Image 1: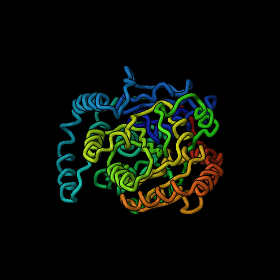
Image 2 (image 1 turned 135 degrees about the horizontal axis):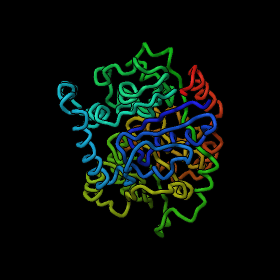
Image 3 (image 1 turned 45 degrees about the horizontal axis):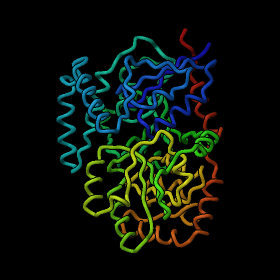
Image 4 (image 1 turned 45 degrees about the vertical axis):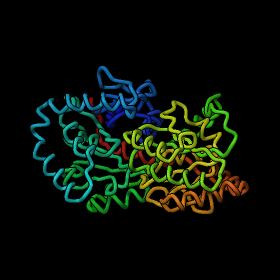
Length: 408
């Protein structure tokens, strides 16, 4: 009899973890698994990419992009409604105040981390028991699976450097004690997580994100991509407009490039809560024609294919889907020296690694602009890297199969 599997994720916005989850769902045999999906925030444009054999448990799902200005407003309204359901806000008032005070003491307030417990406790509860429940993201999805789902086996994925992302045991209320197995997306993410939860080592393993290489290559050939008539050197970055992605540093690097007389234009695909701040910075530095925020694009792959250089200068990562996509499409790549990036790009072999400051980014870009042979070398080496390993899927399914019984 097939196993009943529930996946839980925070949103279905166009981002790396969501993309990777959908690919994993496509790989799971519908004859062996009855798969359901529950999205805590009930919103996201990738809802239209859910495989046909997966049942979406949300009603009246909102397909508006989650990172646009209007999308964030709708998420806020939905969050407020969730705070009233099951008296979640009242129940968690003490939790919010204590953790807010702790964040103030630590000098960094993670507003999004504060609300996940409220969202989790205010979400829909299901009486059905599942064989396996899988929290595919940190925060709300994990809290929900740990505290509100009936399942014989509970699994959680960790996609980020746990400490740098702002999580800790007190915020989590030690929810990982309720999780039977934990997958991290890279070795560095594993190490970071074990610094917080050392007792979880025996039930933790690495599962690298799955990508469909053939699908990405096919979509890169579609008649889309850059629509301007720019003939200079094109730089591309794909990522959410958030503090983590350090676009403020990249904008200052672009200013230095222009001061050096470089004939270059930098394009960014993505949305996020920093758009207004970044637009103001771009305007202040008079880079409106040089550093372009193009928003989310349904098909980003032609942009990768058409760019001269892919740059991923972030403050920290788990394992970047965008870097993997750039590698599949043979882009020369420059990344910042941080957790996650170090594991994906080998400096001088299949890309270049720089410090996260405007001077270092500018210096490396100028070197690559003036070294077409080096760019070709990096691009070829990147495209030859093993992008997906069927052993990863087999490992995941082995954990799934370790559940002894099925629900009748």
